Length: 474
Ligand SMILES: Cc1ncc(COP(=O)(O)O)c(C=O)c1O
Figure 1 (cartoon, rainbow, N blue to C red):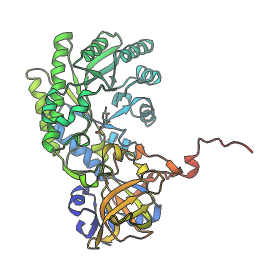
Figure 2: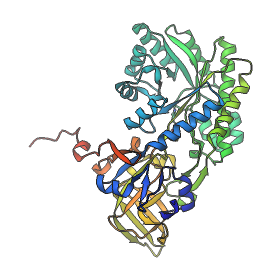
Figure 3: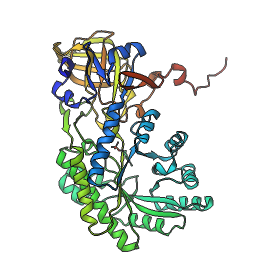
Figure 4: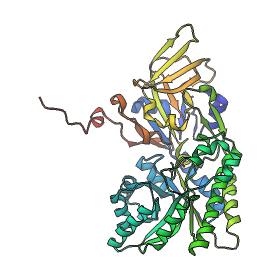
């Protein structure tokens, strides 16, 4: 049934549709049984609609595949990817731990009643306030970034009379990864503000500082893998190799820690960067000709690659607890953005090819991460049969006075003011990176489940955008 609705790149977009998206009996686009055209007209646009079933599926599928392969593992939801509180609550209730970056995310999950023992506290250059909160309340683990941070946390924990569980964040050497993927070189060569370097010996010094600190308990090591599709020539094989090789390199460092310091490495935290199941659309802004669909590895294939690498390094020893901090994977296809067309303009310059600008009431400034992460957002026209002829060279743009290109070089059918469009893959790093440039209020967020929509974040009002302002009197 899905083929009845127009998609800009039908083959690609349908590959990327979550199972919850389809065409309802009335011919309208539906997500979790909610008619998206009706929702947009009733609640107004722009509007982010979250599919609860997709969110739950993404978490359950990953955890099921991982635990099926290696029972001693856990997944934290990395809330920097999406911080609508209802989403954080849903995933926590389903069994996710929470990865919080420093103090504000820690504050907010505590206000939701999440026990500190479910929270991994991450971040570089952590404030004294963040460390003091962890020292007083504890955490599943504090991921230690440097020797100085270890000493600061130890002093605060001593004052609080507590011992705090810690892992140490390291930068790997990537020696073998570079053989597999030379485009990883910039990640491997530049000094990184996160964690400490293994090759120079700094990481071992940080581990030693934690081990020697009376009020810190050394639990293990951490390394975050950036989703390789953002950085490199992507293939499913190279993606699996990135994660498996990072795990293997972390295991080799764990063996050196055991041998040098005589301590156990009970936990290996492999960070995030997981994208599994289906396919993802990557499009560097300004270079539409380079837009590509990456087929992602299946969750079981991902699990097998990573856990095989770990098991081969722990032969005969007790296997560690393996932790993940997954953000984008949980949410990326669970959210769509509904927007209304405000104007359509045909433009030509100096005899070049004609271009059609379609202006909508949403803006790329509502997801500025698009330019950093090359994330593409396939466009569907809501309420338009699939066989409607489409014209090429359309640029979907927002109304702000910054470069505000949402999609470019795409095909769309004739559109007019008042038509509705639906942007896919709006879950990861969109709402959390949204801005209010030109005083644009940010969209409403609705959670959809079993045919019903519930507002979980109200639409921003102009008064909200300027709520911190103190105008001059007179
Ligand atoms: C330490 C850490 N963990 C987890 C993540 C989440 O990554 P992803 O959204 O790719 O899963 C990030 C993202 O930047 C990170 O820095």
